[in-house]
Image: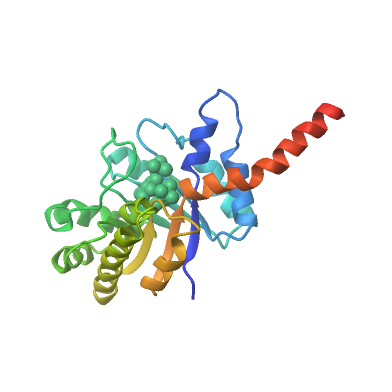
Length: 248
Ligand SMILES: CC(=O)[C@@H](O)[C@H](O)COP(=O)(O)O
Ligand SMILES: NCC(=O)COP(=O)(O)O
């Protein structure tokens, strides 16, 4: 079975936040995404709410519950007490824990599982007790010992950080090296009994090779590249609508 696609709405929210206006609507874009067949929605609320606002979450939860009950809500973030409260109120099907510093522009590394296992274990247990699947953001070249420590937290899955792979879009030799690391880490995770998700800078161009290299990929979450394509492929029709509005 092919991997599920969860669309990350952070980039849409960031565009919305440029003005004190309600468009583009994060909820409406979520509806379009799910109507088009995506399997879920991902958000990564950060403490400064520079993209997703905490107030977006109830609307997205209601969208899924009321119109797309088969879809999944995936909330990503650093497990501060505020984040955990927010997650528990939003009841996502999946939580992806990411070792982000609030000042970080975007996520750029996985958890040091051996070092942070004692921190993660009770957090994972708390979320799982609340009925949520837990995934942990993981370096693309995590060692066997690191993967064993990830499994020992009680998490269900790891999400492979694919940033270095996505970033080598203009260097096929480097992309092959990065892909090899991802394939090896995914195999270690599968052997340890963990499900494997992946995300960061994935695109239509780099997805096929990733899916071949990681045959049991459960889910990809994609935001930036997918939103960029939505703009590029939707711009012509939008210009035509504005020209028609001028003539009406
Ligand atoms: C966890 C992760 O990989 C990130 O990709 C993140 O969720 C993307 O968030 P931004 O689009 O806000 O950088
Ligand atoms: N977990 C990764 C994610 O949600 C999307 O990352 P990106 O496609 O915006 O880089």
